[in-house]
Image (cartoon, rainbow, N blue to C red; front, side):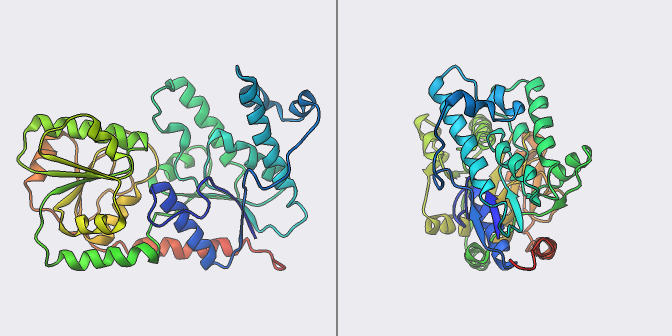
Length: 365
């Protein structure tokens, strides 16, 4: 049995990037023969008793920042969150837990990996990205550095770490955390329709460019706004369809007629657009992780035009055209783009992952 701490649970093949990554991990765990139990906040009974005594039981490193708060109700909420995780995980100490799986490495979830480490569980960490380094608009460089070191400290509890990007694998290695590479690849539920799109594109007339992404993700929002601003000023004759989670909010500001903002769309409509687009354009500021939608575009046979920040872990891949500045983007919009090959090599990493985690399976589980 695997004890999992992930806010996305089993994920979704058609959700946002985080949900797709969780769905991939869930699919691979099932393929390896593991049963999963999720760390759910409302699953176990609540603590009662003296508030102060309960607070004082919490390790000091969590006490100051995570419990004391300007709002007493917020402090109680955080205490309850910590205690629920401690209680949940302690209920498993005498059971056949193969390993503890940690997917979301935010400070809020340090509690659970710390408890799993204390109880001596094997820990496999598959961070969707290095959370502390994602731009959030408020952290100073000093605070970011402190948060990053704390995240690294908790990742060091792991018996095994799998990174979604080569850059993160390299970065963690500098801090003596050995990690393996596990790129995103769509599960069969989404791979099949993407391959159908690939076939359809062989005979379809190509129309517009797609700007595709979940702008509920801050780096994607910042990058998309910057991209739209440039394209409006450039007065290019091309037309751009914008779609993805949260993109309907972009319609609140009036844009030129060269943009059609679709917002959140059905899977069917999305695949219809993918079948006839010239390419997908992605623009991001510096951030962590890797974009699931780039892999899916490769599977669907769709050229990707992206800036260097968005292309992390996808350097030197056929079908991905990377621009360093706006002039280069303008040139690419007029160019004949390379057609992507199927990224079947990614499946080799999935096979290795399955082989590796099977070694954590207890004999009597």
